[in-house]
Length: 165
Image (tube, rainbow, N blue to C red; front, side, top):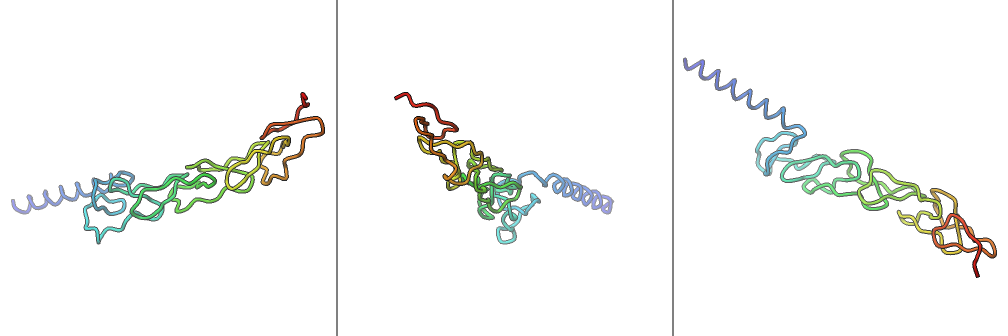
């Protein structure tokens, strides 16, 4: 009988261990020290912090999503700042938007500056008053054309209209 109890206890232990490991992937571990992708206790010295491109949340690691980047192995992921983006999970940095485009904080892509504007430091600036532009994705203020004589426009215009003076 002792052999059967031992076998049953070992089998139960192995079953519980495999169940624990099968549920660990993609699930946050309890608060406290952890092993990456394994909700097993360990000492802080034996645990590596989060893998590259992941952030620490409530004692467990989670991947950084597009629009975020890892800031360290023991801190949460941070959103990309305005004018930058990340397209992939597990990003460790954000890329600057190309010339002629912009992004909001936490973006996974950039948008082209609309007509009447041009890119300036990661955001879009309006063409000044009495100028206009029909160019989408402009990268400098040189696209802003002066209104013809006798016409005016407000800042950010795509056309000019006759003066009422």
